[in-house]
Image (cartoon, rainbow, N blue to C red; front, top):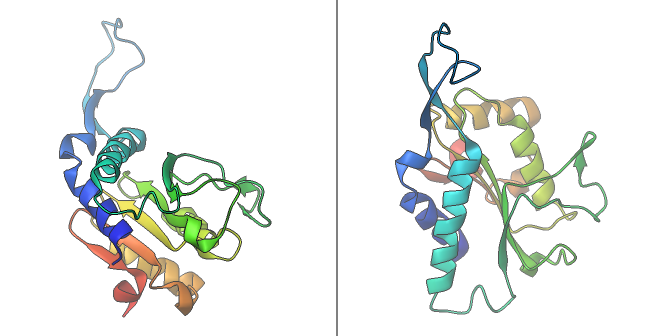
Length: 193
């Protein structure tokens, strides 16, 4: 695992679990007296992503070597990857949850470091996210590594295996595709061995 991935892992570990989910009430309105309200757990990806972004920025700011400044790397959130050929999946544009890169206009591999997707919902599909990650690693966008951060999932590793069973991920990409869970940091090659 390179230093950028280690920094991302450190940022993830610093996100307090209170950002993983929150409690909410069912119902349309606060003022409806006859409506029965039930408490439920709400999973909000953006809340987790904002705190992860904050924790990663703190790590970047404290970095004592030049790995971030050398190529003028920036951490951006929900940025559209436009302007490069074949950067759509079907008709959908690629909007990564976070990227560590120099900018939008230079897809040199030294300037495209991390492509990050986040999933916080229980029992959701990873298929579209993994497809985006594969495009990010291709010569279209040239990212060095793509990371799927999965929280609130008990079966994340199994979902990666199932995706590969149905799709057969290119073996050359397996060491560049990563799954970070609350417990593990594994590249897809480790998962699929």
